[in-house]
Image 1 (spheres, rainbow, N blue to C red):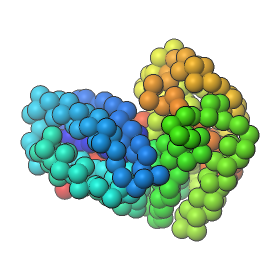
Image 2 (cartoon, helix red, strand yellow):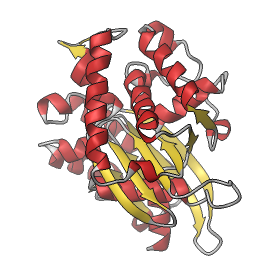
Image 3 (tube, rainbow, N blue to C red):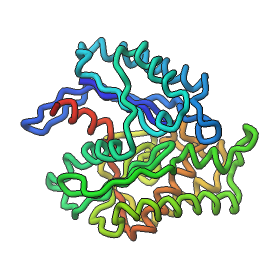
Image 4 (cartoon, rainbow, N blue to C red):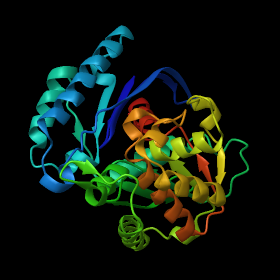
Length: 314
């Protein structure tokens, strides 16, 4: 089967063989492209033409990969999240994806996104990892962050409109110019937005009940790669690594004080995250401080894996 997750900042593909009986997922191909689909959406309410074309180009590439693995069309699922939910012209997005891939993209709700992320992140955590439940899974995306609490299944979920791209564009981008590095008032404004969103999320999800905090998506995995001092991005080393709140606080401070060139020089930094990683790290830090979590378990398995399992079990 093939799963595609199209978010605000990136579009990702997983091609896998799954066995629901044994609970095993054999990865055949996993890749990501930074397309910044959500470029300007918070300000204009529309998907920009150049952002759409970047996304459609990635879809055409993924179509070739899917064909090479002989995945039948009925076992391809394309899920679109925050940016496409918010856009007035999402019909243009749907038509372009359909033309490139031959499948209908599903523009899912925040609650659906949360459930898929939870399934992907926690499916294997019960196997000898010694982690306390319930799990609080936080998926820090480009346009939104999902909070999901549960044990074997979801008990509470909430999606809120804070993400690394949205907060960077809202507070640090002015007339096309990025404030770099951000000033103390800029950081305070971003923090205020994060804290307000955490209060909103806590109205639905009891954040203080978490036995284990599990962090997903590129902001979290990038912070993990920095903490591990990796010479290059290494998914296997990052997966299920554990970061202390002190490590996250130190790295966040370093990223917020760094220039574009200094952030770009970090070995694990993807070029598409250079401008938005400070806001993403700050979201993670404020979540840890709000919940009292002393560490976060980092997962490379996320909504993509959740989509895959839903296809396999359909």
